[in-house]
Every structure is written in C-alpha cells, then in structure tokens.
Image 1 (cartoon, rainbow, N blue to C red):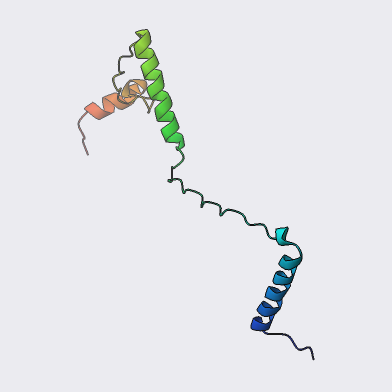
Image 2: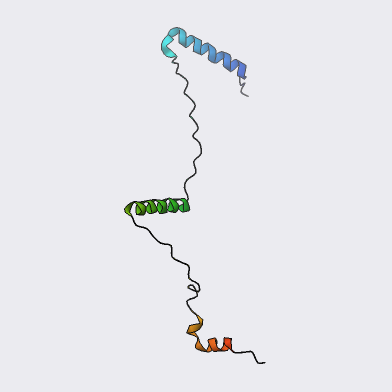
Length: 102
C-alpha cells in the first residue's frame, strides 16, 4: 500500500520548497495586482417584434408630420368581412320581410 501524506505534511513540504527556491533566486516570485470584479450591468430586455413595429410606426408618423402629410382615419365599415349582403340574395330578402304563416 502507498502511504499518502496528509494535508499538513504536504503544506510543510511545499513551503520548504518555495523557501528554498526563493533563497537561490529571489526574483522567482512575481506578484500581480488583484483584478477588479467586473461591474454588473443592469438587465435590459430585448425589444419584441411588437415593440419594433411600434417604434417604426412612430418614426413613420413623425416623418409624415414633418413632411406635412396627414392621414385621416378611415371609418369602420360594417359587414365588410362577410363580403355578402342581403342584396346578393333577392329571394332571401323577400322571405325575411314576409310574415310567418305556419
């Protein structure tokens, strides 16, 4: 079996080797200044697609205002999405106005 030295005997052995090396060559030991800890930057969230679109729209509105271009709001239209009205079905229009006779 191998006899492994304990930590205290290893420390003593390494210390004696360092002292011996420093006696022969005093310039062998180089000390360095401690490095500063990096400063933590505050968390900044990345802009989402909606944020980017909003900023782009604001910039476009500002550019239009500087150029003198003004857009009037478009009034909402009803039944535009359906694409059909009662006028497209003439038989349905009469059926809806006639009285129910069961």
